[in-house]
Length: 200
Length: 200
DNA sequence: AGCATAATAATACAACTGTACTATAAAAGG
DNA sequence: CCTTTTATAGTACAGTTGTATTATTATGCT
Image (cartoon, rainbow over all chains, first blue to last red; front, top):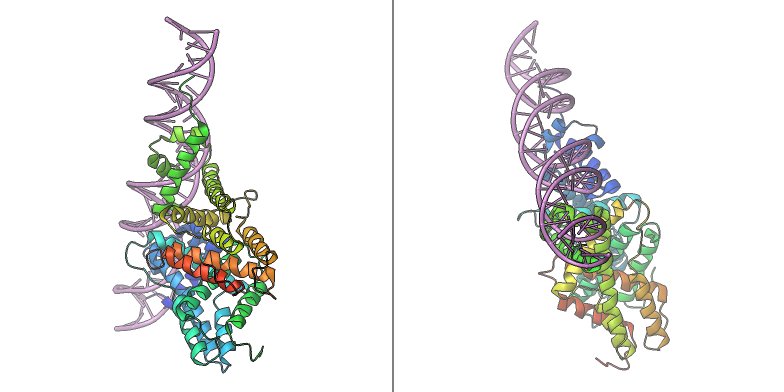
């Protein structure tokens, strides 16, 4: 046998090359050849880890999702006041820095790609709506939210705000900075909460 | 000379065929051949009206924009109370029925496509941010908005909400109905306004 | 040492892409 | 009527695509 190779690590390496290609040229540039070139691999080598292009793209997308979820988990495990916790988690859902920007970019491209390409399986939710809903329930049950709010509708609004901010960051990153997006989002959560304590 | 043909009408006809192709198969399906087939034209005939694919796509996108703006103009010319007017205009910006749904779908695909393809020119804003901003200024100056709001930030929030709702309609039209999206948006504008008059 | 096997490479193939070019049909002008 | 011009059609070409197949390494195990 030849040198033993960590397949999972290699696949992640290829997935990251895929991200770069997509970031630079959109999903239309994500041909197996472009990805192989970016990863300094031959077509055959690439094919050794992903037999089909669809398989590769799907893996690359799942990796984005996993990383995002990992970041959220890291925030959740911190000891924070409800409002701070919620805000911090939500901030993980919009692209602030260069790295998360890349992930979001890739995520959008994939979402659109799979909307048409995926035959029937592969259909999956990104789970953001559920995350937002859980956060709002938490905020409400811990008594930090204004009274008389319809949780479902507030979920939908906040969910739309999140993806809208992310989309605007995606489309026009120069004019719409990450800091500004974060400010908007933070203020929105503030508005959602009781005004008794302005604990910033 | 052969039969005189209304070039503009023919171009619009081709543009609509382009929309259909994109709706069914995404931007990746929008090859000149697919579009020609959808329009029951030969490659040569198509080329007679659009010498290049990029030209065709750009025209098709501009047509979406023009139609949306026309719808907004129609609303603006109605005599309505400020809040109703604003709400109605905003509702034109999210896809409710099948027709506007198609337009938005096409718009998203184009936006993403041109983000990478357009060399340097073609860069254009969809003008939605400006529209939203004007609406909020109008709402504020007519005394219908709650006091103490930062107009710029409110613009950004509402703008993100609009595109977020549109995006969710785009991604998951079955589970996220147009009526529900409209309800969310209407309620958001309500919240933005003074509560003295619940004139629905 | 040498064989088996995993990793990589190279090439091939059919399908599709955008654009260019040539050919045909047909109708308005004189 | 016939020439001129426009709409349409058909074909060709070079490039890219995804996948399959074959060849070539090079390492680990016996």
